[in-house]
Image (cartoon, rainbow, N blue to C red; front, side, top):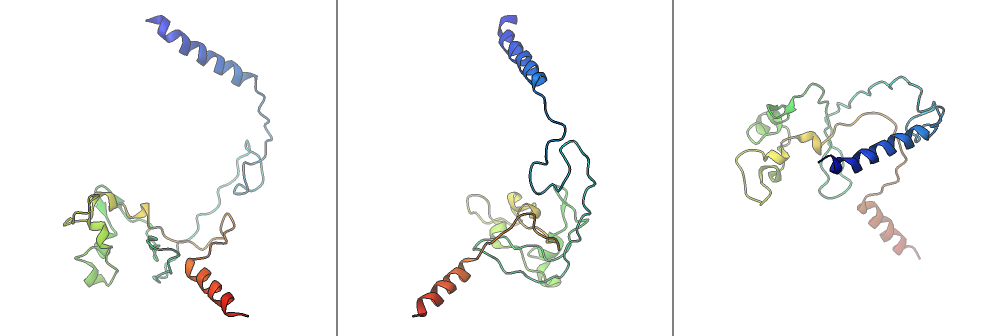
Length: 161
């Protein structure tokens, strides 16, 4: 029995010895541009949490089947296995009363495409796909263009002599 553990023990000891031999610099630069200034060992204050947009305006989607973003704040919403605050407005029964868009019919289907009476458990946690927006500058640059814009530019280029 002890002979089976011996190779694992030797491997663990070698790992500790190798890690002890490496001199990690204490003033190593930050890993990427999202962590401004400082070094890995310095503690920087966390940036303030940005305010969520609360405009209640639908956003244009950039590609087919893109989950719509949440156009209002969801701070303080309970979305867990005991309750889902989103469904108090967006469920089939409540959407007519609240004038909120009803969740897609796909949310009422199981993985085999069978219709369910309630929201599917795999679609229950809304903020897995749907996210609120904030007024902040992007961390990384983005030059994404949706397909409609690309097709329009191609059509315009084809019309020019």
